[in-house]
Each structure stands twice: as C-alpha cells, then as structure tokens.
Amino acid sequence: MRILGLIPARGGSKGIPGKNIKPLAGKPVLAYTAEAALQSDLLVKTILSTDDEAIAEVGNRFGIDVPFLRPSEFAQDGSPTLGVILHALEFLENSGEHFDAVCLLQPTTPFRVEGFVDEAISRFVQSNADSLVSVLPVPHEYNPHWTFEADDLGLLKIATGEQTIIPRRQELPQAWHRDGSVYITKTDVLKSGSLYGNSVAYIENDPKSHVNLDTQADWEKAEILAKALFNS
Image (cartoon, rainbow, N blue to C red):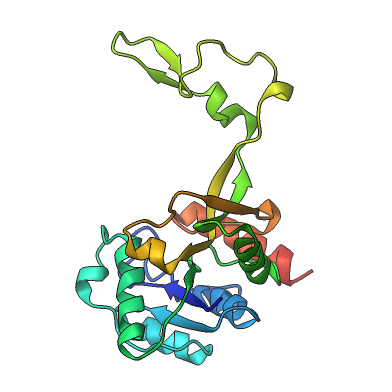
C-alpha cells in the first residue's frame, strides 16, 4: 500500500504565535514531526503543506519535501483539514503520483515514540479499516456513561441515552479520545468527503509522551516533557 505522509503546518497561529517553528527544547516544533516521518520505513513519501515561506524553509532544512505553498483558501482559521489533504493529493496526482492512503502527522502534537508511525500504519493495513486514529484513554470521570446533557426541562440525562447510571467505576467500558498524533485514511474515503469513513481502527498512544500545543499552558507542559524525554 502506497501511503503518503502529510504534515500540515500553516502560519498565523494565534494561541501560540508562530508555534509550528517556535524553538522547543532547542529545535523548531516542526522538526519533531519531520524526524518521526523520516524515521518511517512505510511512508512512501512525506510532504509539508504550508502557506508560509518561513515554515517551508524549516521543513526543507529538516529534510521534508515542500512541493508547493498552500493557497490561502486552505490556510484560514476555519479551513477544514479534509480540504488541505485533498489539495495535496490533487497536486501530487497532477504530477503523476498516486497514493492509496494518507497519514496525517500534525506538528502540534510533536512527541512520538520511535516506531510509533510505522506501528500505526501496520495496524491500519492489517485492519483493512477505512481509517485509523491514535487515541488516549478517557479518564473515568469523563467517561460518556458518566457525563450528562441537559434536556428541555433543564434536567440532566446521561449523554449515552441510557436510563440508568452505571454505579461503579469498574463496570465502565473503556472509552478513548483522539490524541491528534496520527490519522490515516484511505484515499477513496477522503475523496468521498470523509476523514474517517465507516470503519475506524485505533492505536493507543503513550500519555507520558503526549502534548497537544494549543495554549501557553500546553507549551509550558511541552517544555517540561521535552526535558524528561530528551535530557534523561
């Protein structure tokens, strides 16, 4: 299976200005994802999709191909990820390159243990699912069986639609949430207008090496985590 690695990194971030190339523990944030992609034996090709020349320069410096600068309509705050992926696929297909699936690697989840990308790809291929996402466990207090919505009368109802609350933590089924590190989707599913399709496989990530850079508090966590991961 021919799988494209795609790193989306637009300019103009607001929560952490310039976060994609801001130095984190001595190197640009983007570099961590570039290195994880280049370590993969199963990605046929990895490219960077960006609208920003400074980000493109950093991508090139760390060995990632930057075949185009992303058009502005795909680089707005509200630009959907699917459009970014389809733009990259169309560009490459017009150059004669075709792929069976795309592995999206977001630079804002910079830390991935060595081999994690290939482990995810192997699981995706073996599953024959439409897509695969990396996940982390949901803490039991946030399990959907223990979360509530308000009804029209202002009374609480269980978010899952059940009538009876599961009484004990030990009886809760395991729940997961997407962690943002890896998304893999078949090309025909993407072209049908979906990031996930009808069947979604998963791979559990290591919470000890995970951070998602959205806020300054996330950045401070990442600095601490980087010291623990790379200076031990």
